[in-house]
Image (tube, rainbow, N blue to C red; front, side, top):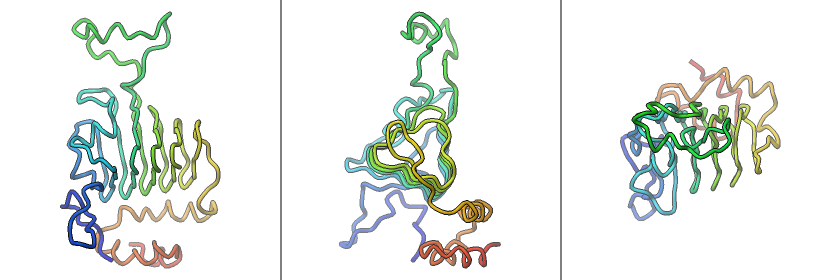
Length: 212
């Protein structure tokens, strides 16, 4: 099977030949100075927005101090939201009320939380999940539906619940180490095409045999 056409906004073709408007390749859909997205990562929504960046990360404004970094081959389901650091209020005073934002001329650059939110490669984020400021999700992780994720998620962990907690790992530690060493998501397009059967079948030996 061919890889998605990275030049298309909507890479899924329905049986009648039309494009499915609810699934987009994020490199084509997002033009935002604070968001970086790797190749082949997509998002889906039942009511496709006009502005995917604002829809996915509603508090991330151009010029904010933080970034949202999404790796390659990520899969982002309907209702997922990234609540980035700009959403956070200062908590060190007697109130959390953000007086400073109403007078930015005298408070230039005011932002109490400046942490980046980082999503690794080949991460599946399920329906309605919420990723909180400063979260770092490792390669190959699965985030369950409606999970609320903060902190660091290890590679190939499966996280569910609120607060999100690791329930188990997708593979044995030795196999996770092998996958992380391979970094197949960085392979050239031609090699990825050859690797697709091994990836789908879960054949790690065959994948390693193709490694450049």
